[in-house]
Length: 286
Ligand SMILES: Nc1ncnc2c1ncn2[C@@H]1O[C@H](COP(=O)(O)OP(=O)(O)OP(=O)(O)O)[C@@H](O)[C@H]1O
Ligand SMILES: [Mg+2]
Figure 1 (tube, helix red, strand yellow):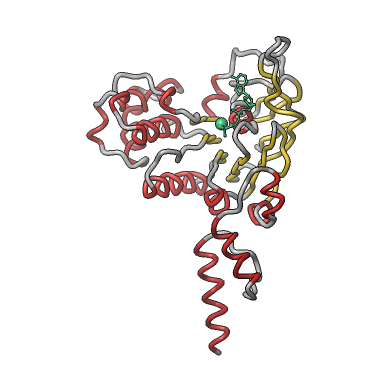
Figure 2 (cartoon, rainbow, N blue to C red):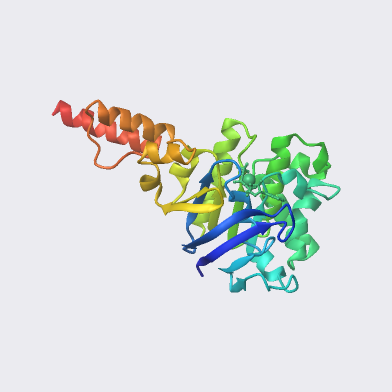
């Protein structure tokens, strides 16, 4: 069950004086079970793109095929519940996704709405509260009395508790402390390893390099590249032209390469870089 965007364009405020392109002629195909990072400068269309994954926005022209649905401009809002069950989105400002009296009720809402009994849904809620790294003590608190980082984790738990086949995340680690950031990214990677598809919008190039199989690069509403992290991050000038930077590890590896170090493959992550350096040091010592 791959995800196909076929020539998708989206106009905000269509046929008004405020009409503005959000997406222009975007086509790509994502494999089931893949981890895709979406990167691009501010206003490049990343959030607009993500909202097409479960028909919160419908293409002005073109179509989206996902989870057995084909969505185009004529798709009715009725009957989309099974799509929303299979494709979960954590929004860029997840605070806006919280609404229940208590944290546990908030997380249980999705699973219950999609058919679990109240008891099962609350069990799921407690499980995901723990998985996103929050203490059970928070279960009975109002979600609006939490810190920004805690609210973000509750919103993530609220979507993941329904265990959607496709998990879409709009800058989910923004505002988390460095340890929380790593924990939550590991949780998404584990979710992918369990057979789900993950789509992650991020401004963190190191996360894109470390976790993604595939990268979509957006610029002014257009998809300008769909390739592996190694390919996307190899060319600093190309990235610069699209208002992006290399991950720190890649820039460092290239600086080492310029200074004479030879790499079989450009290291994308810190552990790959360490491994490559160790091999060379060992090689030089023999
Ligand atoms: N509700 C809206 N009404 C009108 N225009 C919008 C609306 N939301 C977004 N846009 C416009 O659509 C374009 C793409 O916006 P989008 O929010 O998708 O960008 P983004 O890549 O997610 O940016 P960021 O990195 O800042 O979150 C921008 O030019 C933006 O001004
Ligand atoms: Mg955005």
